[in-house]
Structure formats: C-alpha cells, structure tokens
Picture 1: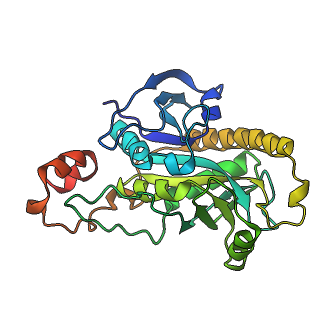
Picture 2: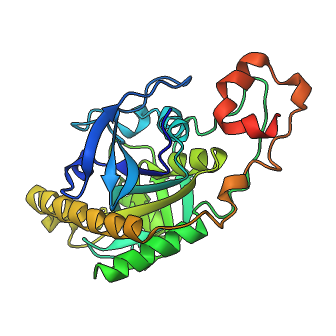
Picture 3: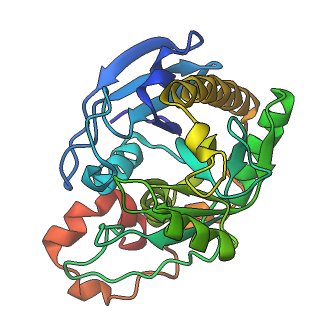
Length: 287
C-alpha cells in the first residue's frame, strides 16, 4: 500500500481544486467494510494527498449511515498522519456569522449508538481525549486561514447531533445556554477514531447559517444556504491549500503515540483475529 501522509475528508467539491494534479482513484478495502467512497489521490502543493467524500460522491449517505471506522482505517492504511476535515455547521453564536470558519477544539456528543471505536472483540483500550484536536495542526490551519484573509476563529465547542433532521428551537436554545458554539452531525466520530489510529486531526467548521435560534432564521432562503455552501467550499480549499503548502517536517505532537498507554488487555489474551484486524493500528505495540 502506498504511503500518503496527508488526508482530507469533506465534500466532493474539494476534488475539483484546480491545483490538484496527478489525480487518480484508489479503492481501499478495510476489515470494517467499505469507506464512503473510493479515495482520490493526487498532488497538492507538491505533496501527496488523499481525499475522501464523507457522504460519498453525490452526497448519498446520511450522517448515521457513514462508516466512520472504514473511513479512518482507509486513511491509516494509506499511511496518513494528518487529517484535515471540513464540514458545514450551524452557528450558535451571534458573532459567528455565515461564511465564518470555526476551528473547534472541543466536542459534545449528542448522537445515539454510533460506533466510534476500533476496539472490542477481545481488546480494550482507553485513549486520552480531553483535548480531541491536534494542537499543532490547529495552529497550522489557523495561520493558513490568516494568510488567506478568511475570518477564522480558533477554539470552541462543536455539538455533534444525530440528525438527519436539524434541531428544534428548544434544542438550539438549550445548546446556547450550555455555551456551545456550532452544531453539526459528523465530526466527533472522526476525531475519536483518528485519535485511536494515532492520526492528527482538525476540523474546519464552515458556518452556513444560524441554526434555528436566531430571530432572522426564517428569512434565510435555500438559495442563500446554497450560495454560502459554495463560498464555504472555496474558503476551505484556500485554507487547506495554504496549510499543505506550509506543512513540513515530522510531527512534534503526541498524537502519534496516543495508544502507548491506552491498551489495557493482556497481550497474550488478544484473539488472533482481532490482532490481525487491527494490525495497522496496534501492530507496533504488540511486537
């Protein structure tokens, strides 16, 4: 399997970046089933990158239908060490307006029953997740956004809801009283699994609207949301391109050793099938 150190998860519009060269499709099989789609591999800013459409090309998958384990495992198999993720969110703050970008450093889980761990089936692990976002990667992305002149706020909490329906007004107002910043449906599971896979992870939360709490919400039209989505996609491309252009050297954060003290199970008791299934994630701790 080829080694590609940078992964991007987001909408299929990212594949259309003019700067992406030598692009080709790669089908990756994982022990957790197929990823959302085949991956698009190419060069961006002279670096090898792998793109994955979170909902599949054509946006075919609901948030609850996404095979998050397969998506992150596929990135791991390719050798990815850093994942740049982007997704549309609703703002829960007056000062986070549509077309702004938030780089959350915390998550709150309001999903129900989604699988968000590689472990089980005879092996237990408990990773530290107090700080779910890579501190080095979020700094790199924030600097890149500044260079691109895109209003970006570093730090905040992303509420991950089940969906696919949006919030009720009661829910939206409750999250505001809790001090939450944005709301979306996908990124928490990615962050958890990336940490278990020892991959650096950051989310670009692209604000399209004010959720449903804002008094002017009823005046927001579908055309306006679509226009915001398109502009957000262009902003995400600008930030990611600059981030990758500036990226250099080996990782200095602790993400690459997240499992060092997390594996609890007696190594001699790990079932052979589970050991084989997780080889690319835990292999270096079993030798």
